[in-house]
Length: 172
Image 1 (cartoon, helix red, strand yellow):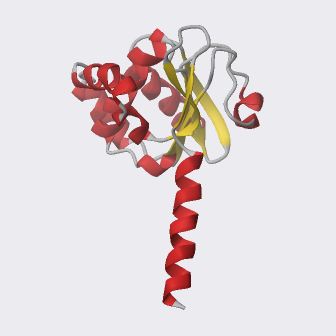
Image 2 (image 1 turned 30 degrees about the vertical axis):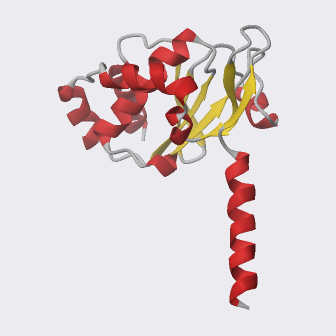
């Protein structure tokens, strides 16, 4: 019985692991790109680590805004739609993760979806999101979308996030 359970567990983990962090070749550049549902571990791959690690390392979100964001009591989640082929995504997504780490934001509340140049993932998960530009950071309060940061922030990632969350806090 134990052997059957162990084999079943290995099969489930293998199938689940294959659902995330899929790499394909970009037909335009001939370079690897991520597609579909991913997690932060995808950026460990050397194809992506060079830009992710440097973008993360050299971004310093404003401490005063981090403090204000930390005081907001909304139970929010974030969906990130990006393309590893896109220079804006390569610049903003590592910075956004640096911001989230500063907030000690739970990884489980972040959904990361990579799209191809046609803004399509591996399934229809992005079709209903109306993605025109990447990256797009979609902020949810429960299941309700409360705001977006599209392509580049208006002020800064942390200030734009504060604006979205503060507006929602006041509207409650």
